[in-house]
Length: 458
Image 1: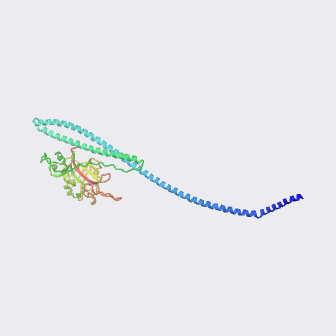
Image 2: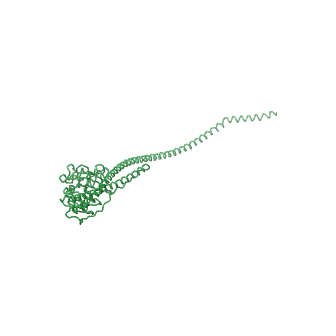
Image 3: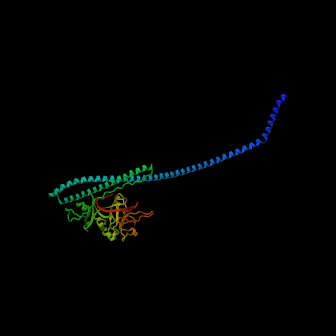
């Protein structure tokens, strides 16, 4: 009985367990598993949606960063290109500076050689001067003897001749000293240019080259004042042939004087005196107050005011050139007040040759614009040379022309104007055009003659 009582709970519990197992396997287990899967799907979908939004924001941020990087790369490329362009410009300018430096060094060497030659000539002339001074002492002794009647009149003529020769030698020495001084000024100018170019080359290797201009060498103007006074010791019958004779007669004040070349025709000229040189001025342009567009007859006879702007006259210039050897000295000033000069040995024909001019250059600090050893006939608007047929705008004034629109120091006075791009410069105004090189527009000109007895300028 006890055993039966013990077995009944066990059977009952077993039946309940069996019943529960059957119910778990049939309905509740299946329904509970299905609801769990839907929740997981929803959670997963929500997570994917948030992940998609995050990826979208990341893509937008990344795209903006890439655009910024591309902009920076473009700026870098442009800066690098600009830097390369500046580097190329610096290299080109450095090459130009090297070429200019080499040319200036060559010019400097030539000027040094020329100066050494001039110094050697001066030493020889000084030696000759010492010897001549010794001869003068002996000749003065002879002169004393002449006054006492111990020598013939021929000795007196010899003394006068030798004194004149000594004076000529003195003039030669003074002239050469002036040339040496001009060469020294030119050498100093060349040296200053070399220093400036060396500084530019040093700066060009570090940064962009800076433009600078070397100052031009300027000549000092001598004070000029007109005077018609005469020397009280001058013989009234002794007519000066040119301004050199006026100077030798004791005049030292620049101004207007009367001369009589070859004792034929007396006329007035403007004499310009310096410490050791007497110039006979044959042309002067300063302000355009005188119209130089004159006829052939006017240029032959001369026109203008000797104290202002004037042209002395071809016939008067010819008469001067026939009595002695002269140097043709041309002074030029541009619109920046830079001054240059050039000098020539020359010959001048008469009116039957249209006053044909032929020159050979002696010295100067500007390229020559007159062809050497080539005869040039004088031309005016109404009297052209045979080889010229110039239009009216290039034939103003009278000059020794080799072509139309070239050098003309007697052209229409006009200030330079700015030109349009591609426009060619016409031959108007006062102009100096070397065969090789640019045309110089001039503010003032002055042409003078200096009498010399120097036989050789080679």
